[in-house]
Image (cartoon, rainbow, N blue to C red; front, side, top):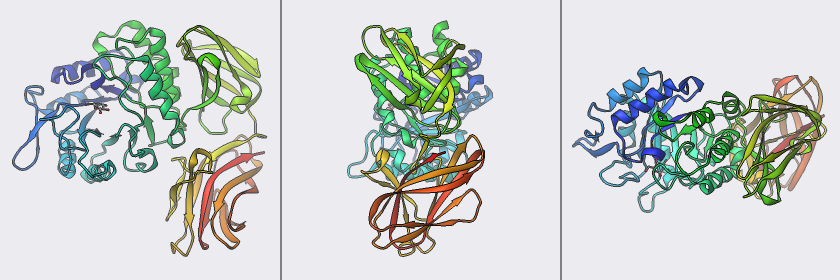
Length: 494
Ligand code: GAL
């Protein structure tokens, strides 16, 4: 969470602008709600000296870069900088990208005291993929020894959600939400939000899909639209970057940024991505994400009217995996709306939305599904993410056996949360390309592994009885036999 300069200012800013915004993060109370990063984007460095080191734009930053970063730190905030995979940034010459200067620039950013680095995707050198440059930069950042978050801003190109875990912490899923300086556009807000859902399964701790810095508070959106925009980002567990001028913000816009219950939806520790659970005619959509655990009776739900006329919207408990009665809280209004059976209905204006917390009984007969590729799981050895068209969400994790890999490989499904200790069923869905029947191992929590027979050559399901304990569990599969098993997902039921 923080504030980022580009969407409001483009390159029309200087040292003082950044200090003013840092001050405003403090005076508005936003810092204390978690908006901790000040990201200074674009038009920073105008050349390189003879030894290749970056030259800071002295007109824009008359006190130098370190002094500005120190100021940001003195306000209890962290500072972010910007570079590019090309020789020059998106703003073009003379602004410097880091191509073939990754080590040197990362060391420079660290020496200035930065805590965060954005790397943009403009001017990609011909014939070179961005991924290699991003990986070099990630390694360069690691080598500085200074903890700096790394933001891959490839606008969704090269799908960093599939390969950048452990190298970067966040990546852009789409092109810019604002094509013009200080301007917001409803259609691109909706478009950027919707495109993050395609990669929702890759959303989790240290693996954040970013639909872009927000444009809440910039001209072009009604107040209703601005609030819906914020709800969309919150239910997406998106990085929350304010992209407006915080020194000129009016009361209603400030109220949007500072609603602690809505921020809590964004910052929920599970970090699950959003899922569109239902769509009705005339643009009504129902989005949900579990809070705290995948098998959670507590869910954040956004009802949104993307249509052009007021309409009724409803959410059915069955779409959330809940049964019976559930309590509904309106998070924007900080108000409990009561207990409802089976569903909740409300009226929404055009482009309006509600963000609800629905707390009910999770249906353990239907169960909770855990995708193998979720970034909160742990892979060891050769375990690798693979494309699997027949798998749910189109990905699986492959475990290669002894033939390919002496030590074997494993996948741990972490954060399997159940409400009571007892007997559960684990349904494992996998693809096994081996010929012969083979044996994998399954371990529940720290208990000794048991063998699991895998019939050869199939897309199959194994249903296994397990004892789980109340709260957190982990289930680990390992494979040291011949061939490769692709694990798609597992479902836990009562
Ligand atoms: C875009 C990037 C924006 C901003 C801008 C600066 O490519 O997505 O976040 O950094 O470049 O030129």
